[in-house]
Length: 91
Image (cartoon, rainbow, N blue to C red; front, side, top):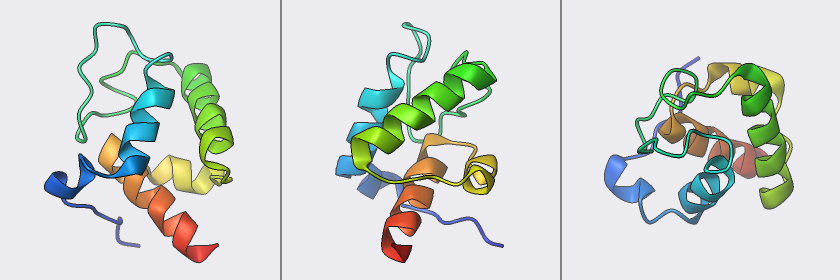
């Protein structure tokens, strides 16, 4: 299955990207620079529990359920934005 993509230029003005950053910031290391290409597991200093807490907070904030198999496919912030957009279209 091909991974959904979103252009780097478009992502900065995407309200979903902004919401993800707001929900992510409390879970990531304070000094971490976050960009669309930031790896959620490698770059953010988050363990699996912190990632799950972040996902739960994000699901509550945007009122959507993100299946575990979709989360497993996500590597970067950009991937997450694209995956959530796809879930919203499927709903």
